[in-house]
Image 1 (cartoon, rainbow, N blue to C red):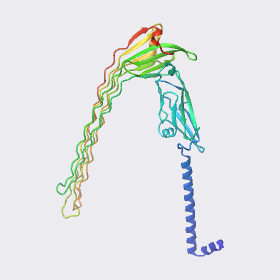
Image 2: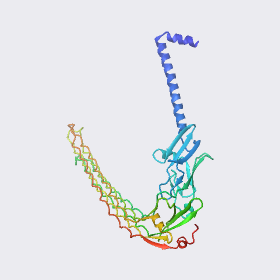
Image 3: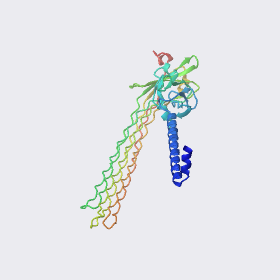
Image 4: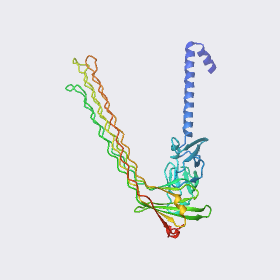
Amino acid sequence: MRWALIAGLLGSSAGCSLLGTQLAAQEAARNQRAAEAAAAAAKKKEPSAENLQTVELATADGSTTYCQGGQPPKLRLVVSVEGSTHEGIQEGKGQELFKLLQWSASVGKISNQGEWEFLADSPKAALQEVVITAAAAKPGLSAQLKLAPDFKCERTADFRGEPGKEGERGMTGNSGSAGTSAQQAGGHGSDGGPGGLGGPGGDALPVEVAVGSMNHPQQGQLVLVRVQQVGGKKKAYYLLDPTGAPLTVDVSGGAGGKGGYGGQGGMGAIGHGEYTSGQCCNGSGGNGGNGAAGGTGGIGGRGAAVTVKLDSKQAALKERIRIVNGPGLAGEGGTSGSGGDGAQGGRGSQGAYGSDGSRGSSGPSGAAGQPGLAGPAPKFVNQRASQLFAGEAL
């Protein structure tokens, strides 16, 4: 019966047209369903916190160690979703993968993007292995990475003064008032306000550095360093291989804050226009206001006094320490404010436009601040080994 109907339809031009329309509609519907199914499948394969099937965690360079006071290890994450694998490191688009997991560390603190920080508050802590865990929403699905301390790496004990705050941003200029029949030209924008002065860098607190040695069952003899603020709470311990890089103790002044951004000039207003009346009224557009100068950078802080206490029987330990107590860097000058946009002139009854306003000038960049003062020369004192870490469990 169906074939007879089709044959009958094919027997006339109208029937051919109708059949062609029906077949085209069916084909379009099939294509639409296929596209929707493909889109749904692709979306299902996109990783989310709920649909991860496997999680793998490693360092980006394949290392299995960390360096206290050095660059934290950059992590590499690999996850799979229904056979589709996704990989990323802690930069660019890879950061989005890290946000899908819950992060924890056995020591120190770690962010929701796997950025780990650690400061040893005891000699024992400086020897610790760290375990970083990335856990998925699915119960039981997680990955762990174990990192052993590297005692030969180059590292810095950062005891610098606090950096100064950035200056306040200058106020944006006001926009001009629109032209009226009484005042045909648009108003000019006002100038932006200047950026604020960058804050001063903080002075570094004085520190006391103790340098001795300790024996480790697997590593042998290691150099033990304690860096402690005098009059402050910050304290950290470092263990160094005697053949590795020395420890840099940085007690420089804090950098001055950047000057504030100069305010942007206000926008000019559109000139008044009356192109439907018999009167010609094609007011000029207002000029944009001038941008303001960026703020002056802040002054740097002062470097701190440093006392280094050494084991009197191990003169070579002095070479394991490098002291930096220079002036804080001058703050950068603030970025200049841009000029405001000029406005369009009004259109008159004869179809002519008034002249457009001009764009305001950009302000000058702010001047850099002044560097701080350097701290005094480090003072070295010899002591008995038993006095260097008296009362501390080594």
